[in-house]
Length: 145
Image (cartoon, rainbow, N blue to C red; front, side):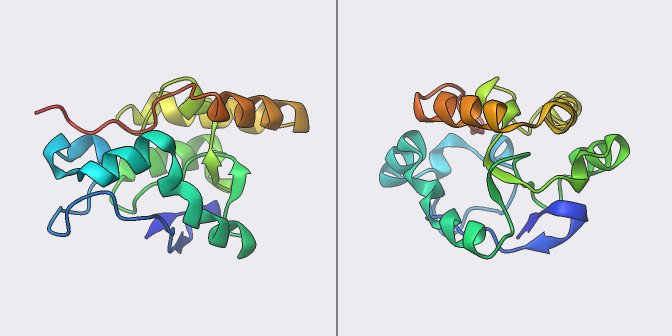
């Protein structure tokens, strides 16, 4: 489950990249050893995001927008609610991701989400899509311990 536009929860489709017994938590709170070898490849190549095409078809996400977070990431949800960026449709990639800001920095990420909302345009979306395709940004990083 993820939090989408207006704070509504939805099922975000992804390929499994972590071991079955891994606790559902923000990626930066999960140990690197939880990621399978195939999962590491899927994550690095961004193939794990491919099933989210279903979310696009169901009009739950777009290609670009604030990355949807887990319902347990309350600090990020509240920061987005406070600055109005929770009213944006979430995306597969976003301004935060191409600027290497992940959900481990909720205030900073919410500020970039707000900035995206203020500057949102077709040109900006194309730039974010191109930056994502060229591998800019690392996505959410798992804990190194």
